Length: 54
Image 1 (cartoon, rainbow, N blue to C red):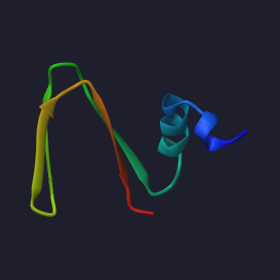
Image 2: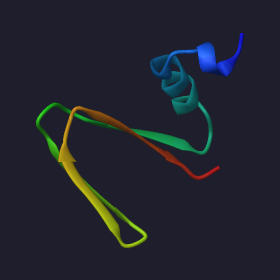
Image 3: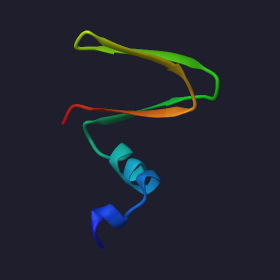
Image 4: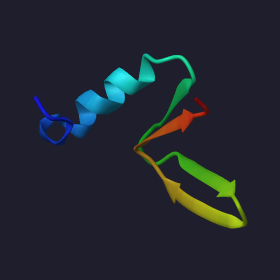
């Protein structure tokens, strides 16, 4: 099986189990804001954010 054939949902679920990965879930209509490198993204959920430092 090639990774391109695996659904995004399954890939995220697997990555979230790994060391060096944190999964953040934003509920529907809940606002969030991310600032990195001088760029800001502000929106509302639902959204899943993977913080990967490995």
